Length: 103
Image (tube, helix red, strand yellow):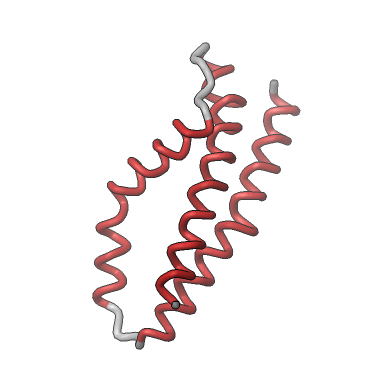
């Protein structure tokens, strides 16, 4: 059950991250460099590809820890929910404000 909860929050993070990335890309990369905006699906794919390169660092940290399974579950769930409900909204808010002020 814990595994399914972590998978579910991971999927939600990818969906939310794709939304945030697609808007940030439109505001800063497409406008600044004259490129086209990326779609929601392309943003999710980009997050996935970039995540693959950084996955080994997260796996090695998880393997080397001496925490029991409950502590690892709580740590993973906490970081996932923090990203979903605090980090992504803040990125979108600050990106929006920066875009409106500078452009």
